[in-house]
View 1: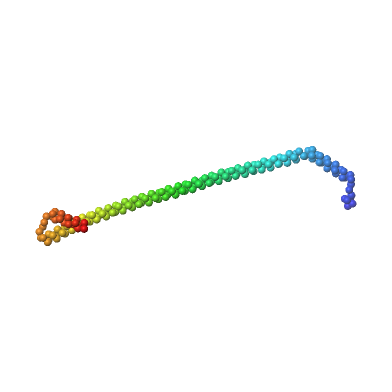
View 2: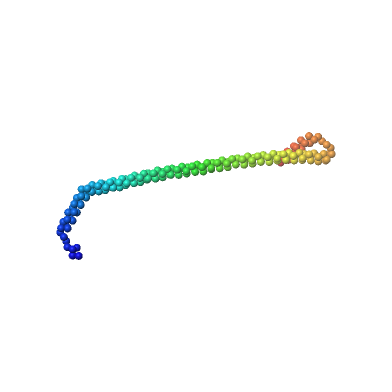
Length: 164
């Protein structure tokens, strides 16, 4: 254990000489490859960073373009939906107008039919009343008069009555 604590000056000198020779050999033969390797690594890292920034810029550009296209598509979709709603409303309005026209036409037809039936019924009633009046008059007078003459007289009275 004594030898470990004693310093041998010859060993120190030879250690320094060996270290210096090793350092010179490293500097002579290893310094350039190490520097070249570090420089190449630095270049690769710089290129990778630049490529990453370019890719990031491209991705942002693509994202912005996609967002613009999506916004444009959304606006177009909204316009299409609005046009569809407008067309549906127009169709509904036209159908309602057509239904109103048909309803009015049917109502007018029904009114005309009612008027025609009413006129027909009144004419029949007048005929029957005229016939009854003629028969009653014949029975009262007990003589038969000219049918056409009676008919004209009765119709004139009926017209006077219907005006009243």
